[in-house]
Length: 304
Image (cartoon, rainbow, N blue to C red; front, top):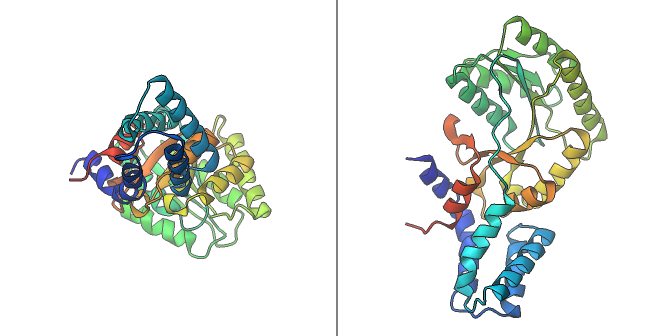
């Protein structure tokens, strides 16, 4: 199965719950204020977000007026175009040959952070890069063991300390080891911080300072893993983490498990952060570079 077909299959719930409802709303309707009001409400309930939904509908209303559109069906192409623009241009991971590339992976518990790290490690290894993992989550019981299991499966070394150790010390040791062993990529796991816990956020900032001191120019990526099924709470997480570390991009997981995939547009619009990777399954190769054109095309694709 091609990745587009896998993406289309993974977006089935969102296509039915989000785009499907829009189709039902606009089909057979004439364009008027009532239609725009209902469309705005539908966008909001699909987790596109209040501000983003209002801006989208205002733009649609103005374009429809200028183009003298009459039927609701004529809004479909316009909406697809507007949603595509919200996602910006595709942005690849900042990985360069000839240096130690350091990636920090952050996010709350349960979003798929550890499996995302494993998928990234597998991808880099298949590209021929030497990869190491750092078990910087010393807060959650068994987090390091979980990362070690993944490390064995993928075939990459894992640097860890005992539970309760200083995460910055783990990362320091990992950096020294990675440099000594001429690694290409070091992926750092971090505690699944609840964004309300200021002490854990301070700890994350400390890890960032250690990385920057020991490897000038690093971290090269600070990726926030977001669970698409959490809806508007994902926007709050992006805001809170962004106050503690300089996020470089988002990894969107579990898109195949939600009908409210509109959250991707809310985050892209409100946080101005690129979605760099998207996960639509459990296999190691189910984490791919995010391609906005492909994503929107799959979202609006007709069901077989």
